[in-house]
Amino acid sequence: EEDPPEQRGPRKAMSAEAKGDEDEPSALAEPIALRVHETISSLQGLNGLRHGDYEQYRRYATRRLRRVRKGANFTYGRGRQFVQRELTAEDVEASAPLLMVPLLNSERAWAYAMQLKQEITRGEGNAAVSNHLLRRLTKAVQWSAAFEELCKVRADDATRLEANAYASWMAANLDLERGEWAGALEKY
Image (cartoon, rainbow, N blue to C red; front, side):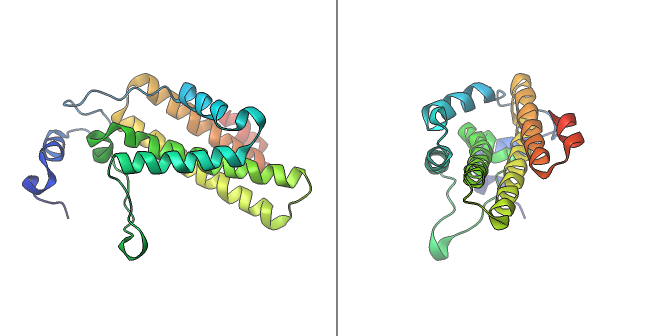
């Protein structure tokens, strides 16, 4: 059920009424421009990956994700007050920094998978760790696909292309880990 326009706030009410085609950016709001590759490269270089420290990068992504959610008032609550909230195009339209949420979630899951991969290569891993790695990469693919979908609705053309490339790269990484060479080659 959707709230009446007067309960949604003026910005959400306008976006719901002006919303026409789901695949095109809203006519009222300017498309979001986010240089995905540049943003990720700088975050990775400044937060641990220059030295191959995936754990530090994963922890940074977790903290940054919390700051973005809190700044946009998109928190889930704690304990008994926890309420799972799904990020929608309307939320991103109301607060542009929320576009970073699926990107940071994807980066966090990817960094955790790479951390587990390092453990396996050092000889500290077993079958359970390998399965955990695949689950984290699958989660990274899901978040990157969610990021791509939000960009299709709310971002400019360059950001859409970069989001598509990022999602394809992440899916190719998963196929590579699973040993599906043809799928990986197609997505790279």
